[in-house]
Image (cartoon, rainbow, N blue to C red; front, side):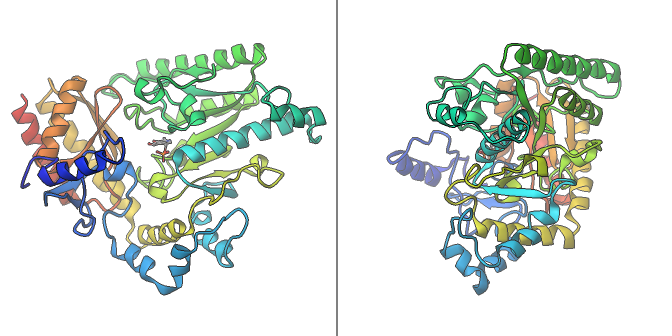
Length: 455
Ligand SMILES: Cc1ncc(COP(=O)(O)O)c(C=O)c1O
């Protein structure tokens, strides 16, 4: 480290940006030419071990040679230069590209995929797929009436029906208007924006350590499931039927909140009982970060979920869906670009690297080391840390309060480690899939030092 972060050069660049855009969120500027692998180099030439990786969206680290080769391949240039309107005019090699990338890792039973720009955009369109499938079912296969078509144009029923979606406390699904209605993490994201009264059920709040609190946590899950049922009944009875339930397999922004496979299996059964579709938002948990391509694979659901949403480490936003969720007309889920083929080419290459270098095994192995290391530290600094937990590289530990958590994050950053906050007082780590044992050692040493200084 040469300076504290942001250093003087970053601060000057931030001043320049401030003259052009309101971006209070900017933390510092990065020199992407110099950044490599798990290390980023900032404008002041500080070298940081990046354990937050562009908001959990960088699967293979900085400037991975395979991705650079893919982008330098002359046969791929056309995909960089000519951005197509994929929903209208895909390229001649698009079917083969999709087959080799997204469809090669499609969750079991989800035979269709839609590419979109980002996580929020993918959520929005997935919700539309839910509503369309629900109404198709209600119409019994009949086409929409003239009255429905016309009333939809002026936002009135029956064309714009009073359907709802159920979401969970502490959920995060994005910041566009529909996704925001399903997001419940911080008032800062939501304040001043009109919303609709859609049902919200509690996401289980586990008591840590898990060993020793099994019974209490099981009761907590049962309580939340009971709440899901009563909310669905309440909203159905009001004439605002719940068409779908949207949930993260592990809540990320909300504070790394886990629930058991059994919770998800029962939730799927509840959805089936009430005729609601189950949507899993794997934007943050997907693409190998937990040691599984899709974290819901570990739930062993009796049947596939209806929709799985992805973005972040998948390089492109979008969602997988079952045949039942497939729109029956064109333009129902659509926008100009519908994603970006150059990102899908990167994804294809990334999946090859994951396979060739057995990165899912790496993620599981190094992730265990990270959690074990944090568990040891929590034993040594019990007044500061608790609840160390993780699945693969999706790791977190709770800090005694938010002020102390933020101080630790600042100290880590000034000592050369970039980590992030989540929930109220959680410190979360989202390293790349190529993060190795020695990187974990470096982090744990620095973390130890920071905790020692903050005793
Ligand atoms: C679970 C989940 N869903 C959706 C989103 C929104 O994705 P984006 O920021 O790409 O719109 C996020 C972003 O953090 C997320 O964690």
